[in-house]
Length: 361
Image (tube, rainbow, N blue to C red; front, side, top):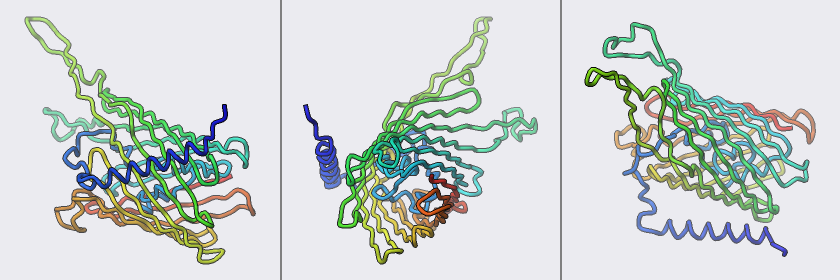
């Protein structure tokens, strides 16, 4: 029995777009879910740790390619040429003492003509040493400290069904731990990118992120001893489970090739969040010979942005972002090394800064 997979995937893509357009036309489509804010956990899944995406404020569902696509639209992973290795570090809300480290590896299977790509990412969020305060030691004079750990490991598979259709699926293992208490879970991502136009310069993308099991904390840190009826009893505190921050992203992009060595990409993006307000925005990216790349973006959170300083803003981010990349080929049509920087403006704090290094073989 012959199955036309390209036909099936193309119709699946069109069906998903039609479903999203219908949902956007509903009366509550732009209202978001801000009334459910704070009811989900695993917020590290929404923290961006890669330089190129940070410079565009994540508004690149349709255009992001390579290893970084695993954190927004797994379909873009299919554009990996051979082997990509990347490392990035983010000073999240500079001044807060929070740092995010990301390490990734992506490899095309079957050589340059292969259509399948596998990717692996590891992301760790570090808070530094936090002093332990007790009722008997409110000033932490004992010198004890603790350090929460947030870790997720992602595995992604992507395939190019044609020059136009690229599909990806990702699985993430999550772990959060603090002082003998931990929670673990699994999250899934899926995404599609569709490329068309006379010069492959029209892009569409859709992704669904962070779909998975709820998490619940447990461990020895939730047990305590107490006396009752002249007996020592051990009590175990029960915790409430929490859901993951599921997100739907829809994007479109257009490349303007002004000359052989110049490219300007225009991107638009909409993000629907299950536990917070929806986000709408876009980005611009200019590339010269694909060696120097400048980018900027803006993300508007519906019902809560206000302006840059008023208390009506419901997020620490003001919406503005910028970044650049410098790609240095080691030889013609050969390996290259790239450096990425991304900045997202915040108020308060001194913004979120991301710097990373990429090696493409």
